[in-house]
Picture 1: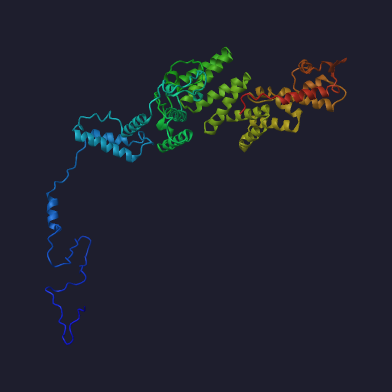
Picture 2: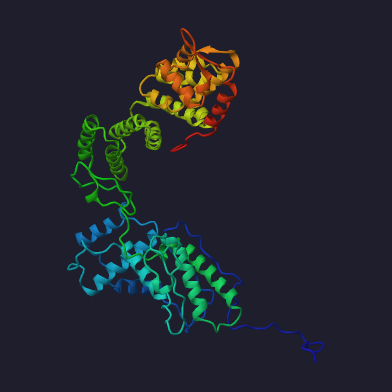
Length: 507
């Protein structure tokens, strides 16, 4: 069948009742962004279904809506918001977005309840405090309850109270605030393994997976601090300020955070130092003085007092310890003094740097001695105490015992107390050299002068103490020492002296 007209008949054009519309829509050019776009309708016939409202109607409807009025916040609410964002009240674990959301929630609640003007905003907890409390409550609710003793018997472990708490293995019923977070995590995993024996799959594999999942969750929460529950108040962030007014106080090793009532303020510590200096000159009781100085140093440490008064306390205690030969206390003071001097505080740094060199010579610590010498400046090396200490080191390194004992007789400050600690072994080394150089005998007076003995009697007693009484022979006008026979004796004594060095308190 064909739609073409029969032959001989001219086809008439189709007629339309309406004119044909263009295949495009003319869009007028907008001259500026402030003008509204006025589009033309593509179709000329009216549309009755889903006809959009005109711009005029929309404007009239929007004018009918009431405008939102600006709310006048009370002054107490503004102060509360300002306190929340102060740098001293910020919490690193709470983000700013969380604080703003909590602030809006709190203020909106009081506004809806009509209690905004009656709420005590000065005592209202800050938003970061509210967020931490909510996290703590959510964590406590998420923790499973402890198992019953009848359902899951657990072995009883006898805990020695003298043991460290971190090494105690206590059950869930014995967990307290002192349990460390990682041990608490292990206890929870052990509890899950015991109370849920009917879980599908390997029990050990499931418990390990759950333990690792708990660790990942705690890392996402910002660390183990979010899961650590403690009934004791947190320790103070800054240094404490002492309130104790007693001049004398015994030293106790701290096992907990110090209390202000047990610590003396700086003005009381000044009076304590004056009292201790008078007691030392009068009584000379070292045990009492050392105990009081350690207590004084402890009060300075817990209050973080680092000034010239602190330097004087450590210097005086170090000198007293040197006088009594207490190398342990001396070295503790010397270590603190080195840090105080490096921080720029003034004191007798030249004196104690010289002591440090002599101390390392005594302990035969060559590496530390080289470091101490490397830290010296050119100007410090010209100071008499340090120059003397360096000369002692050079004389011993070169084996020049004649020079060494001359320096021993002329020591500045209190360096002689340190040299007294190693002069005996150096005398043995010098005697071993003398026995090899002089034969067959030598006057005792020569040994007295060369080895810096105070008298011939002291020199003879030194030889006798080394089992060398057979080496002493009386002559008509002097006492002779048979050095030819004493070479092996003094060499053995020298080796024994250098093999045992008292390292008490060494760095």
